[in-house]
Amino acid sequence: MKIVLLGYMGCGKSVIGAFLAKKLQVPFYDLDHEIEKSTQISITELFQSKGELYFRKKENEILKVFVEKQEDFVLSLGGGTPCYYNNHELLQHEGVFSIYLKASVDTLVSRLINEKDQRPLLHNQDEVSLKDFINKHLFDRNFYYHQATKVVVVDNKSVEQLVSEIE
Ligand code: S3P
Image 1 (spheres, rainbow, N blue to C red):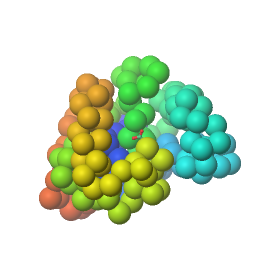
Image 2 (image 1 turned 90 degrees about the vertical axis):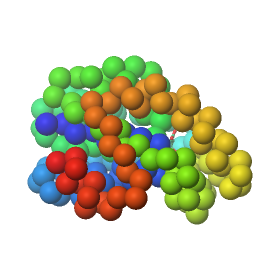
Image 3 (image 1 turned 180 degrees about the horizontal axis):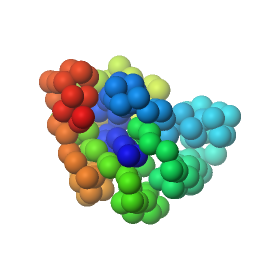
């Protein structure tokens, strides 16, 4: 089975994905990392030098390759992936089981406030504006996130708890 984890920045997609893949004994992939491998530059540099549209195009191209793969794997998407191009349709591909890791705005703010410099979409925000920004962003993205096969609430749960729940 192709398990795809989606959700807002800071919801834990990469950490949970890596644990889950290990438990299921299948390879783990992170879409941002795959984009960095293919373009040979970091996501931050990619946003700066080529712009977001270029990044979104790459995201779409690489996601398409993944959903068509024959092997089993766990794949963590970027926070915006389901919301661009036909990505939400690609996630309906046969054999794909998508999971929305749903975090509250407060959880996301507390995790992202110290990590926003690594995220090109957040680095201009202070704590107050970050909360507003996330609220608005989630409003725009919820429609896509909720098309996942399953929704798992992540607030106040350990990685081990979440992995067992998903299993
Ligand atoms: C993005 C999320 C990031 C990365 C890029 C854009 C988004 O991934 O793909 O900075 O649009 O939410 P993470 O969700 O892994 O931080």
